[in-house]
Image 1: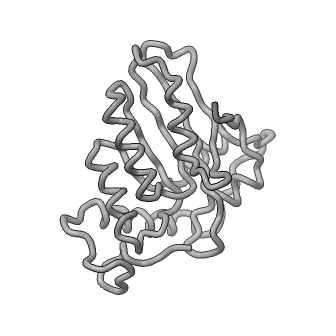
Image 2: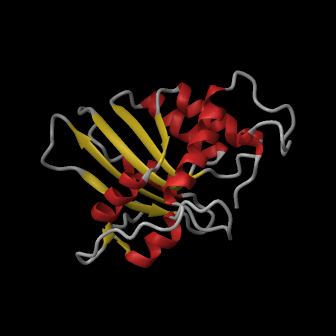
Length: 198
């Protein structure tokens, strides 16, 4: 069984989850909470990160196999990066085989959306009924209080957190509303969803 992290260090969370529009590539982190209406006393929560070529989403899905198939769950995830194409497909496949799980995903940044397959992966999630949104200030603060060893310190919002959220949400909305995606991978200047974010 993949080891489940319990709480993130403060500096690590601030580094990995800042919704910057540019900068160096960072590892992918995924914080989650699984709640069951039938068993509200024992929520399952924690975080996973990408490691040794295995994406955080795949580690997360391995852990979800331990959920009681006799119960209904709402699983809410907070991703530092939106899923890649392969992870999106794996998430959709899991949901199709586990109809007792309702998945909600909030992302800090959009991963390589200049690549057509990653945009298509996000549309697959949306078409599968996944609630897919970009994290806003309230989501960051919730993660800070829930998944971070904050030692009673308040959440410190960074510069442009609101503006960057609006930028990414606009790009995500454009992707999910498109009937036909861009004709060529890497096409620039036609629509926002084709721009690359590092």
